[in-house]
Image (cartoon, rainbow, N blue to C red; front, side, top):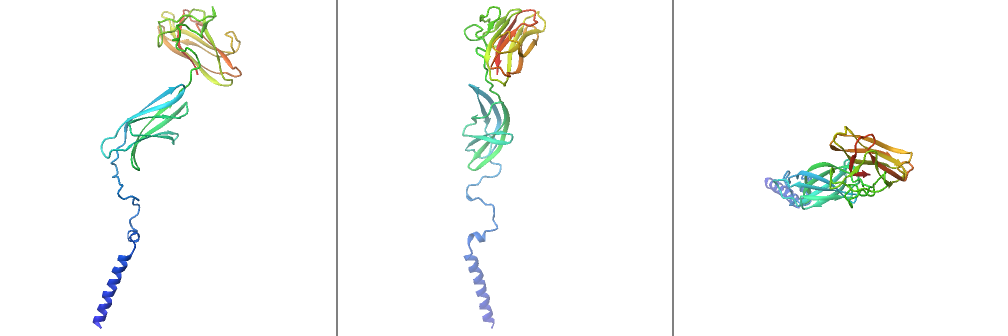
Length: 282
């Protein structure tokens, strides 16, 4: 009887061993969850360094906005395959530029928005922490010809009201570049520009206040229609600056029903000539 009991015990041990040996691998390892589908492709936590020093530079080419970005590679850890530069607006990713270099250019954004950019190092399916920065994109197109008075040595298409003709530019004083226009006392420099009806615009000009004339500078006006002497003034400002220096003056207006406006830069109540440069309508 002892021998029989011993044989039954041995048989039970053998049966347990056979079940263990024959059980599928997946069942035997069911407790190991969350493993990678490719166990050999692993990256230690924190070994992919984030880029640093993200610098954003907005640019405009023919009124089309773009943003150039550059950064410094992170130090230490695994060498990344490359970088991913993401453009976000209000927390939503709009575009991703992938590059092996530490710089990239993003295009396709809307004008007049402020964007957040994030750049990540990446390696296979892993990405690092991000470096981030924000940038405002504004490529308002200047509707005025010869805005810096650098073309042809004259003020054209701007005319002086006393003669109805363009005048020669002067080389000093200038705000930027090589030319500016002198507007004689009690005169106006003017031009007519086509605009879209019912649209808001900003007219601006840099003006120089001659030494000894006090603080009164150029008078900017926007007149509805194609005549300098039209009765509907859409906006105006009499500049006030520091004698012997340049200041920028701005008029914001809505075109209303007009499809053209006449822009004027005059002396107004200034008691001496004024000079103007770098005009803009956008």
